[in-house]
Structures are given as structure tokens and as C-alpha cells.
Length: 279
Image (cartoon, rainbow, N blue to C red; front, side, top):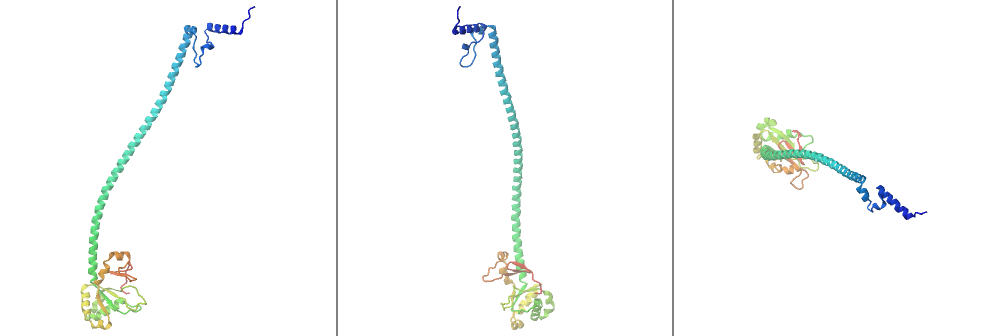
């Protein structure tokens, strides 16, 4: 009896598999790709299997291409929408910028007009200040100052001044009560200062003031009472210093209080005070 060895048995099985058209282990290369034997390639079944493999690869490639195309289309559609939105936003921003530019242009034109108006108003204001200064300077010529009138507690300065003026011009004594407008002491009362404060007289008409001024120069009554009469126009030097009055300061050194008389107003340390007629 013939004994079949293991090697002979293995070769016989390989030949049987080859005759059936199946793949052998020798037909599988290291790369992992299956190759058919020449017998399988030439048979109808091998051709069918080869065609099926080719179709499967084509379908797989087509599917991959379709997926990539769909993904690219999706991304492209998203980019298109984003670009469209950005375009709309850019147009809106452009309109806003154009509107703001127009408004800024209008504001520049308006500011130029305002600057012209301000310059004109400054010129008018300077002219008005000059006219006011001239009017105040002219009105100050209606004033007189009396010095060395003794002060009394609870005195009526206006009545005392009217009596003094009546002694100087007795023919106009009846009219002096109406011709004398305002009378007040200049400055603050200080107990330690024994010298009487200066008295300011404001007349309602220039003629009465000039008459009193002319008569006072040779009036025996004033000489005996040691009362001095001075014109009010010499106050203009201090009054015209607007910066000094506005700042509440004084150009004269060594003075504690700065007093200025402007028309019917009295400025003491830069603060306006409206004295009563009877002080």
C-alpha cells in the first residue's frame, strides 16, 4: 500500500484548488492585492469577477467624487451667502459714512457762519462797551465829592448834604431836594479811622452841579467848616480798569478795600453794592 507523505498531500490539494479555479496562497502577493491565476483569468467566471471588481472601483470613485462635489458645493454656497451678506453690510456702511460726511460738511459750513457772526458780535460788543464807558464817563461829570464831613450815628447823609448845598447856593435851596439824586459815603466805616469818609453826590441835572462847583470855590461857609469839594470826573482812572474790577483786585498798593463808583453802582472789593439814598 502506497503511503502519501505530507508534502505530496499538500501539492495534491494545491493542484485540486487550481483545477477548481480558486486562488492559492501563492497568488497573494505581499502588497495584499489578489491576483487570479492564468486559468481563472481566461475562464468566463474570472472575467465576470474582474468586471465586477472594476465596476466596484468605478462606483467607489464616483461616490467619492460626488461626496467631494457636494461638500464643495455646500461650502461654495455658504461662501456665496457670506459674501452677499458682507456686500450688503458694506453698502449699508458706505451709506452711513456718506451721510455722516454730508452732516460733517454741513456742520463745517454752519461753524464758519457762526464764526463770522461771533466776530461781528465781538465788534458790536466792543463798540457798545466803548459807548457805555463814554456814557459813564459823561455821567460821572455830574458827581461831586465832599470831604471832611463829620460822621454821626444814625445820620441822614442826604439831608445833611442838601443843607450844605443850600448854604452854598441859597437861591436854589428849594430845588436841591429834587436835584440831588443819590448821596452815600464811600467805603466801609472803621472805628479806628477818625477821618470821615468821602461823600459822593449824584445830581439829576448838570446845571445844578456846575453851579455848586463854581460857588464852592469861593464859599466862606465851606472854608469855615473845612469841607472840601472835588469833581467826580477824577474817578474815571480807576473805573476804566475793567480787569481790576472784574477780578476784585486793586491797582493801588497798600489798600485793604477797593471801591469804585460806576453810575449808581458801588463796587467794593469787586462786589456790586447798591446803596440806599439815605445812608
